[in-house]
Length: 504
Image (tube, rainbow, N blue to C red; front, side, top):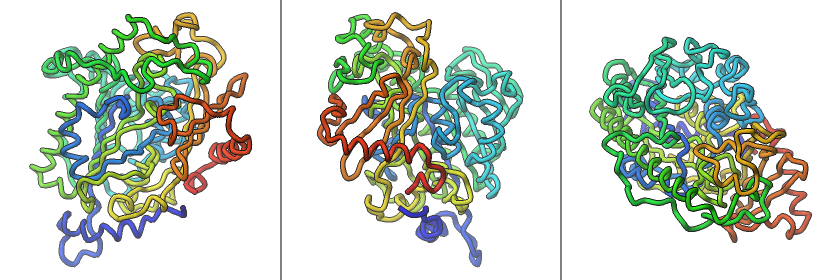
């Protein structure tokens, strides 16, 4: 694969930048572009999560590139967001799960990883940086500096304390505590993020700038804006594929899920599914408003806009309740839409892009040499602006997850057996016992996924996604053992990789 092609990629877009950014005559280098990242929470692609996003798809995807194989390297909020910020796999940034004990927004994270996150490098390149919305699940915890802690690299900071909420939350506004209630006009978090981003663009922004907007949708408690509270009134969770199908030959937790699910469980997840879509309609409005303000300020032609999510989601697949945390496609695939100077409209790109690739891409856009960082990902800017072929890109990657309750059953969980399928609303049961695994996910030359569990069985799952895209049949016991050995060795190398060795 070689090293990321920073300079060739920059040269490829330099002409587009000079035209779009209006570089003054005689200047040796064009001004770097602005960067906007919109990061949703728990938004899937495999069970219809992008259906409500009509404006987003029209304004970003249809005006640029849509990546059909975008993945998170770990399917849970805090470790995934930590990977996005740091450009590193979890085994390198060491954030294991959503708890403070799991290193989520801990003092150790603040000391070792935040100083190496992409906003720090962009700020050094002259970027003005703005953040609004959810940061990390334990952000603002008294044991980790409270609301006074503003991560390095940010000029304007409006971060949610704790996990996603829509009302009755606290923000850190540049290190000052700001409490919000339940008045829609003043407090609904998705709209507040939109309003503050528009204020930034109108009154404070000077190019080049970075904006990260992180609304709470589509995370629970799934509180819709009043105007959308009755939308999708007859919508139900998709019934096809692996919905309400027993998890035969899968790891211990999936085997515990009751199939068929009880009618009460199905009714709950149908309601949650509708409410998730309702919350996303406000995100769609946010995208429209931000794009409109960029256009009004004559900034749209000099700005790259990225839209993605921290992880996917499931709602009844393999009879599992509402949650994420699993190794399957519905939890690890995420949306990724990108538009900006030099990107042709209506592109559909098949190359596998990881959330650890976003930071390196931002640095590439800013003219910063990614090889000077500890990032494991690589810039996909060349894929955006040149007709690079899939053969020039990665063929496989690592997915890993560490369960919080890896040795003891969570006492809040129903009794195992049929109880797991009735664990609502956010099923921490999916973190009970040994739900800790690492996987190699390959797209070339065959669509394979090989996973090993850190449990008493050292359980293995292997899927041929070319023949079995729904991952219904674990073929680990029926394939040639030499294939398992090859995949095991590849997994061992991935788990030991750092920086360039993760990209080769």
